[in-house]
Image (cartoon, rainbow over the protein chains, first blue to last red):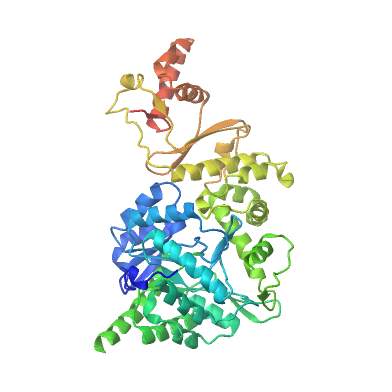
Length: 293
Length: 239
């Protein structure tokens, strides 16, 4: 704790104020054939940690686009000690690729040595804030860089919650100097599932700390009581309410590097590009509005 | 809190942790996501096993494995090495013992995929065949040899196309899996290729095996197999 926020570079990271896509193996060829169609690419850190070959491919891709490295397994909110082997792999990746941005999650993903391959929720209270902040500090110091942390989606809350999610995140930024990766789909999913007001959530957040935005798809289903439940699957196109909330965010905060995040059921390249274009259009409008102001 | 949450995600019939506030059994989303997302990662690594048993069966098999051997690494490329042994011991698949060997082959392919480049030794220009006979050879890093009582290489090959090509010669096979600089290679070794390869892998040069040839025809066969192993890149010269 007690890391002065000024120890790390300011929120403005190296990503352009445009739109990018999450890199999937099947997208590499069409992207290389249309390099100007996206403004940056994002990769999951853990996909580049088995041997050196993948890492070399990523370095090559970095010659064409700014790269955002997105970690999904640091388990910053977890109770196991921080995995130093994993942090070392991560540091090697970041020092080699020198990405424009590095982000992780407000979540836990490992316990007792088991990796859950999911971003699991934390209670929001003073104790969990203290615990998470200390680990974010430890990781930032080890990696020698400021990271962006992503707001989670969730389906349950905890008996021990004493803080609203937005206040918890704002306090985390205040304590650690971390930046934020605002996942607008996660915000929409959690707000719908828990009955929160998404605009009130945004109003409580230090929006200046947001260094990147994620837009993704979710699934609508019914829970066992027949109530609507949104599930954060990344397997569908970005939904209209998420586009609307993104537009609200742009009005409040101005343009930010924005990623179309599709991990499952990845569509044809052209279909993905339509979402990239829409994001680029909204970002261009936000840039013009900012320039005029 | 996290301990009871983790237990309830992992255990097969655990109830939701008491520390959560939920309605409508929403906690089940976490249980399902864990099982299906890790099983999905296995489906990417073992597509032919999936075709052999069918998608639904594979999902159930993979989920049983996930609960029995949950991942202990966040690098899922390194997860699934025990899946073949799990299949071999899986009672309902005892009547299809070749499936475990197909899983071994697919795991070997994923290891070769992540291995560093190992360019093949070019015996047409850089080194002629006579000179190559004086060199010692090794397999590229990440390469595997898989000896099976079943036609495991032919089975794998047959499931690369739609519809599946029937196997007309059901016999034991030794399969090599490796990568040079491009795609992963899968090759069923002939008897002579296997003999020559085993000899080379002892570190000996190829020249020393010709004394064992019983005649000119076998010596020619040895030489052709040696040239084949080198030109396909399964062995590369130690330089």
